[in-house]
Length: 289
Image (tube, rainbow, N blue to C red; front, top):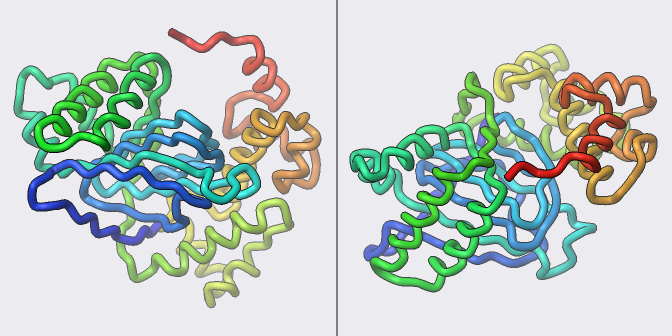
């Protein structure tokens, strides 16, 4: 997907930036920047887009985003009344990461930063400890701020529960000239997910011939338009089953599928198991240590 460049401003006395944001949502722009970013969701639920990954997120979500990796967290407005979507966003300059990569004491952090180009999701004890230091970092100044960052990176690098988000072959397409069309098409899909979405209608929206739009979308997003819609609908169904406690049939139709057979097929293709197996596994499996 063609993303929009975000200019990040640092003060003259700091190489680490931390923001504690609160509002109706976290923004709706698919964006990228050369700085590394750690996103910690304090209170919100919705869908997380990082590179080629689309997945539900909720409170406690913690992700490391590498340089120039497009991303956006789309808040579920029904679950986040005014002022209740809160997150910490920590950014640090690539030069600081390069310095750490040259220090033998931080070889494990160097590996983490290299893997961050795919985006990494963290869970478990180390992620919770890192979240505490992120909070403290936002209230610190000078060397203390950098010390908290080093502790956060050390904890994340040693975490046993890391998940790469984007595939090895994902290459961001960062030409802004076509970002408007991609963003318009993807926004339309997100807003009409529960409705019947027809590709010619979306092509018309961005003033392209359907065949040309099909080629354009696949080249820029890295998958066909129908595959993108199905992945988004499956992610929405997972959210509805896990957070809204909907059963399989309810989640099927609420996420935009028009029959259970197609829903089961698409869900299995993306998740590697049926929706019912997914729910059984969710209720019976204990999270790993």
